[in-house]
Length: 99
Image (cartoon, rainbow, N blue to C red):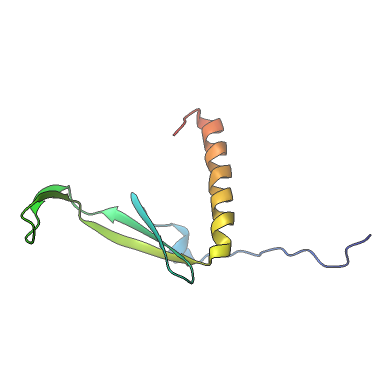
């Protein structure tokens, strides 16, 4: 049986402003009913001891700033997980480093 459907090929482009990327050393993942949100952040100052005014308990405050927020539909989460796993395996094979 011959498949007469043409193959889909994404033609990806990137603007000069986005091409250099953003550095992030922290990520947060959360979801809504409609999709998943990936917040990428950078720590802006060294952690410091602080007090919670309502409970009086001490905690370590880590000031961060979100540098990028990405929203994806639930169907793309599986594809993202597979791509991350594939790239992590390739990285480990190339560098000899295991996480």
